[in-house]
Length: 219
Image (tube, rainbow, N blue to C red; front, side, top):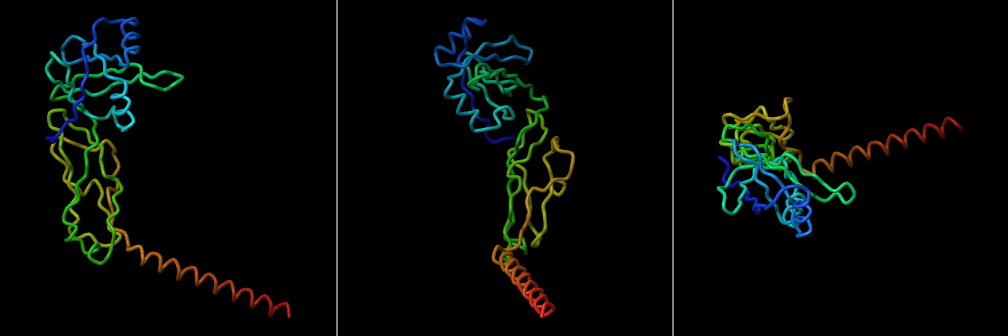
């Protein structure tokens, strides 16, 4: 189960319709609606600066939120839509959907890497290159994993860790069907640079031989 689900604080909005929504915007708020979960829709409003900061942080629509509205029980929600001003591209309205514990949702789950000291490739100076620090998984709202774990034991230089090599938490599956790379152990930078320099020197020598041959032919 996820250790912490971020809070999203909102105020209950009095009145509905375009007039009430416009008034909320004049007051520096973004109007919204909470729907679903076999309950009546709840009009809300969130301070513009708070919502704008959340949106800039990214993945607002793929994050599970713990919605806190004074006078109401906390509820888990996910954003289904953020309407924006067509000219300024600023948020003007948002739709939040209540989730049951059995609701299936796609969320980004962080990846933890363990046993680096047991990876021969890293002991030889190899570098762990993380391709995906998070993986999008389909899971139920009531059983969201805190993380997925990648065991680096036995990994050599040029070895890769793919999603198929990871033991995923029960009830979850990747949203991408193909077997994708999460991380790899790459060669040390110094070794790669040395190989490149040797290749460049070989190319220069070949050029010199070619030029000498050309001069001799002209003579």
